[in-house]
Length: 228
Image (tube, rainbow, N blue to C red; front, side, top):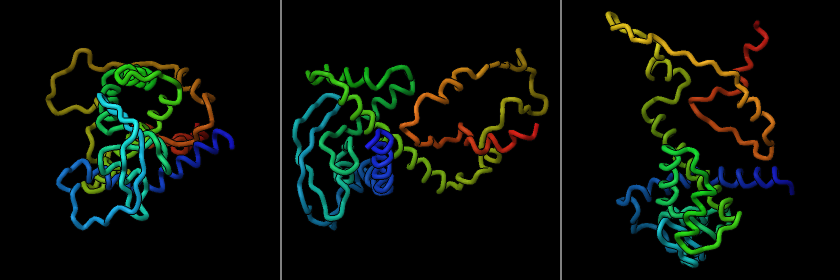
């Protein structure tokens, strides 16, 4: 199998169980939903390695219910696997959230650097596979958070395409009556877009499309390309 095929199959496996993972994450997030006496008895037990901020456990027993994805069993106790079907290495959600907050304020702090920090804390020799495992878990964690935000937007009726124009903040050129004149009145930035052009051929092994309010789909951009 090619690298592209491996990415596609792993992505499809994650997407299939994503709705259940979002529910399990929310149940873990709100502790009062975590304990349910009506939960079925565990069907099987499997063992995984757990990596956290300050702890490293080579083997921990996980109880799995019938017809339940392994990662759903992991999320119930605050873990997320590095594989969609048969995870053997897991990352604690607190560790993933710590790295997410670090990236918000220092975007240049790479996954490789953070993984090396964890290896130093746990006295483990770093190798490339550890970075790849953390990267997989972190991508899935971000996807879960995006789905949570999407559910919030749907509940608040913010999911229709015209909501940014009708409900979001107006652009910076909007002025109120009798508003004091700003000095400078407006700032402009010119960009030749050379960095974006380099990304066009950066790689094709990962065909996933990042969904965001800040990025316009390519099909929408090219809709008026021949109108000049």
